[in-house]
Picture 1: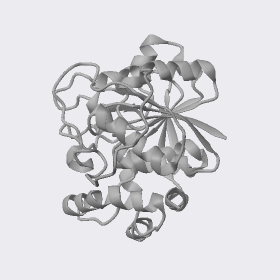
Picture 2: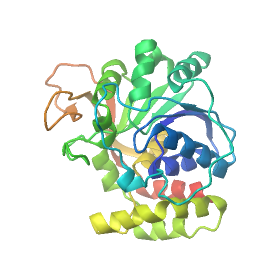
Picture 3: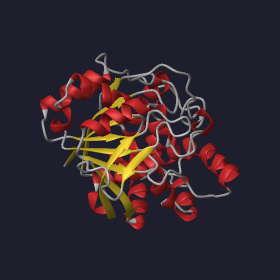
Picture 4: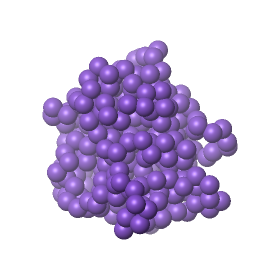
Length: 309
């Protein structure tokens, strides 16, 4: 049984990823920790509770950071995910409530209660994890592994700093802290997720699945598909967080990877938040990150089908 703590900022693809995890027979979600990113903390926390309603799972939700470590104006991703973060689909508010404990403290407590047993899956900015690591410097050794969706390993990002991916762009300092202190990281980059978009046939199948989870998937995804078609001329579906969740749950889905030293640029006017990958070992630093390069596309499609059944 894979025991997961999911740090997330739902977000449509975050919701897809949580559906995937919650529908997998060999997964137990121990907690969801939320933070601001795609939309505000209030909305991401509300959205996490809504996804749990659809899954009918009793999982605690802990709200965390609502902004980056350094205060500054920052755009969210509401233009992609909708103002509410779930495609402005009118999903009713959950009757569930988040726990009173702060997400940062929950991340530390959960690790101390089950040292070496939990996989931490980070599918949003890394602010909560950075703060938890500063409070407990031994935290990286207490989690079995850290799976991160983030970064642009070839400097082909999706933000105004064109070499930078959104999660690291949102809080470069947090990302830098995590990559400076954790050595058991598996990284799924933005460029790799673009190579593994869900094709039109699978998307049509997922959108037409007549189950409660399928109906939820359809509602929250419809406007995202329109956005993708308008801006990218494609009927395929971006699935970055779902792919990261698949890697966390079934590591065998990774068919090619490379282990390198990775750090995050914090100072450049046009490169702040960029992932620096030492592909050839020129910095003399110990490798800290397994970088996913290729995946089993067919298996990922099956996992997404399972997520909406």
